[in-house]
Length: 167
Image (cartoon, rainbow, N blue to C red; front, side, top):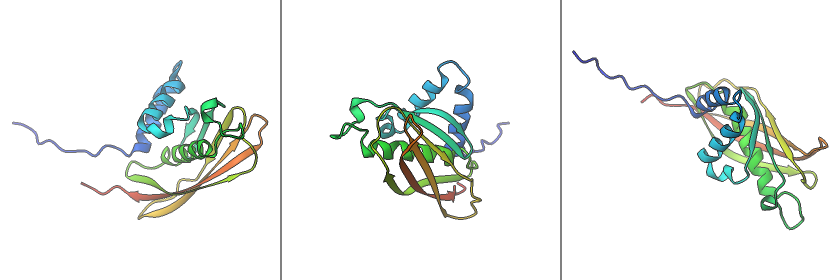
């Protein structure tokens, strides 16, 4: 007798991202590989060549190098490159801690720029993981710092969280 096949839903992307990070990050070259896969999964994000330095539920730290490709006419890192790294950092921090039955989509993004961004930069986001029983809005902030530790920009991302419907 054949047993009936039971369809199971794949876990939300955040769960898969965190599992992949936990598997790859301890390995030699694992953080580099994870960052490359992230850029492949989100091709526009891949354009800034971001490197995930640390990831856990409610926390992400992501770096970008100062490259000519990312510079503007003022010889500093372009505002949209900063927004890109801020958005991916908030998303990683949030999604890495969401339960498997919750999905997230960005609904708003704003930036505050404090000084010209030059040299290597590190974006960091820390957030609490809100309970999700229905659709809610949740803000996550990422500070982007230069080598001296000065905040050059702050990204505020508004994410809509909701339960994944049963299929």
